Length: 273
Image (tube, rainbow, N blue to C red; front, side):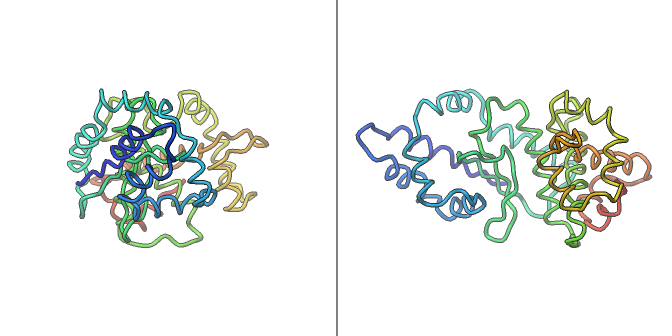
């Protein structure tokens, strides 16, 4: 596994920033240009960011905005946390190809995400989102599972996009739970405790909403991402249904393990929500 610590060059940019100098030129020289191929790919996924808006964001950066992050990284290496988590992950489910990991500082990045770069999935972390690294090993393990799923055999039919979203999140959650069993379930779900409590108390209601046939796949997809105030459903609650489906499969199938789900999309999509 190779880790690309792009954030180190971002800090070089910050160190060279001076009040009388144009920040964009320094940013471009020390951060954007050295990583242009990756960053152009990354920024292309944010339609509200074009060259002009990116330049404006860069010009408004204050060094003090990143002082807490710099202190966090200086006292706790994200690279070391990821390396240690990877060793545990590969013992449970070794990859066919070693993953590449990118640690970057962007603008409102997800904490962890998979990006296709040079026609291959890579694992990425937007460090500007972190106040601490308590859950970084969980986030890495979660994204590592998605990395394996990207490379698993089979295809996901368009009509199955919703099922795949929920089941793949369930697989990633169960995988991190198996890898780091000492963490709380809400940590593995990347929920607050209150969000998990809501899901557990409203499990039947969630199943009814998803199985009623009242809503289109797109509406259910929107419920997943944004929640629904009308239906009193919080965002990403559907992830809990995927977790339950995978948990049930692992509990009831003899000699079955999560590695099979991570390697076969058809098998994963056969799980019942």
